[in-house]
Length: 269
Image 1 (cartoon, rainbow, N blue to C red):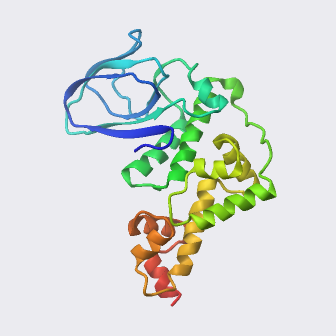
Image 2 (image 1 turned 180 degrees about the vertical axis):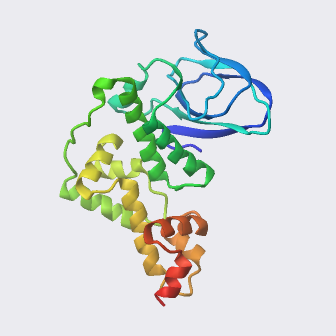
Image 3 (image 1 turned 30 degrees about the vertical axis):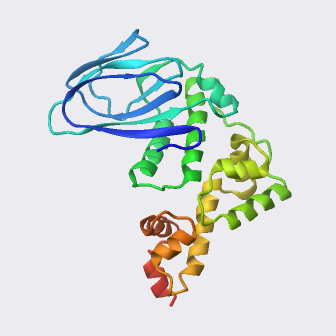
């Protein structure tokens, strides 16, 4: 899947032997889930690793660097790698900073791992498939990469303040008018006249929720009202409030309300 300035891919590998090489015009961050019987991995033809159990390990390669090697996988287990490609097409110091981070093979970082797992859920259907949610996770990856690579930035960054009354009103009006369509962080930041990074922080400072949480809560609030109209199917309600399918509405509705839409409709008459 691709978003405005980054993309992600999930690759599953059956038992086999293969060679691989990654180099491109984007930074590469990967979460591994594999145990190889043999193999080696190098970055820029130099740093080398022959570690076999790379489950829950991370690899980072900045723009202009490369990672390559070969793996041999045996047995019944299916291996996988979830990779995110972060372009430089975003104006923020955190995006510039990651280009200075050296390549790193098979390291551990719980914050990066948790964010990557959430983004993988958006990709494989086990999590929330929402553009604003995914874009927020991408921005969070940039911030976490910077802090993981530079311990002096490990403390929380001070907030620059919230949105003005006028900015918040315009954002809410935009969400209300576009609730049936895909709403991205880029859209909302443009309405507020701010960069994506500044907007996410300012919005949460003002509202107490991240933008994606607010958008989801508004979709569910609108869905609760539409469920009282019994001539509308669950799919009709889902599309009307901006979800891509009835199953996506079911998943988010149950998470936020505690029951499925059909149960909610029946209990409320």
